[in-house]
Image (tube, rainbow, N blue to C red; front, side, top):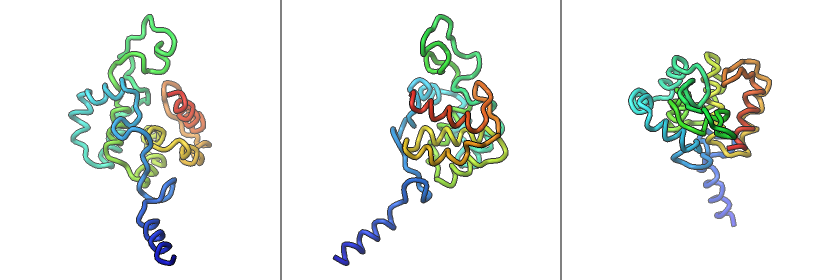
Length: 188
């Protein structure tokens, strides 16, 4: 009996901790697509920005610097690049998935972060970053797309009272942005 208990303890120590404890993050959903909308993913993967410029970035810190200098909105498509005339319903330009356009820098960088297989410490570095609300927003989006649904509230909870404003089609403070991410999560 003592041997099996000892083996269990050794296995528990060698396994990465789940939830918000431990540095290895669990990955929820599709390990290749990051759970992104297929049209967005296709446009990211075929984007010259992703294939050329982001390919050159190899470290977390290089990508964070790129976010700081290049991201100025959080929408999936660059403004004015989508043809939405005549579309109705969910394809009417509201959700950004009806027709393609030029995929945004933010979504290219979001997928680049995914290719780096971020650690818990790196994700915490994104969502607590003080230099740019866009760095923080991409951190929250990373969590929204990659973490198990039951863990989302634990990740977002301490940021609901955040007063920093981010532009995501509209201006959002912390509670509005995080609420929007949770609501959009359940609609996708």
